[in-house]
Image 1: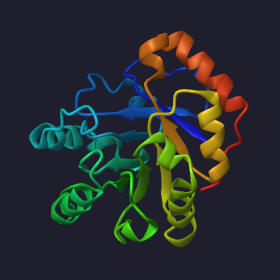
Image 2 (image 1 turned 135 degrees about the horizontal axis):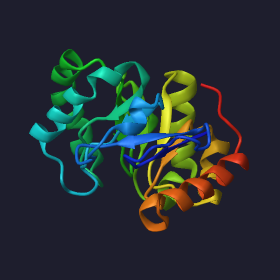
Image 3 (image 1 turned 180 degrees about the horizontal axis):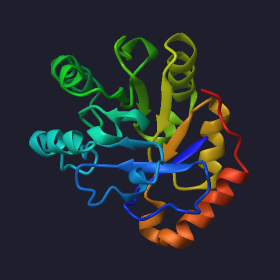
Image 4 (image 1 turned 90 degrees about the vertical axis):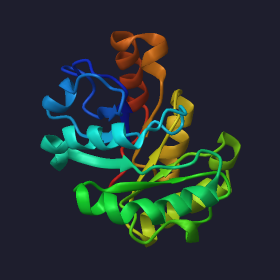
Length: 202
């Protein structure tokens, strides 16, 4: 299991399974230059998605494309039907323009059959009770075993939740822990979480 830290600060000396979650409003890309793996969110969850800013962000990440785990495709938080429709409308253009594996962002109510066949990864969003139950387990299993996708979990801010999703087979998680604890303390704590959490084979 990897943890993707939302920071533009250096990750020199951080736990080897801590990598980077960036986004359109992230300033510097220093940890990407240090060779860490990375993924990108799209700002939809915060209500600040901007297609033009998203496009500029993806453009500036091109020098680091070889270490990209996934980019979260545009989505509609809480609305699985609109998210799927958005995927069908956006992906033909995004996939032609940018060489990233784009993640389908699964909302509450999604079922395995909703994961698009051309998805490059699965980003499990949705309500906690839904995704931590059988529905989330089914999506993770299908994405891993039937589609061979990288599976990522958003909003993971505790050791117990990290272990729970590692046990279900997820590959990575991210959260806002650093924003509450600070970079130095937060990275140290997340490193201890990871030491107590098994890695998940691709």
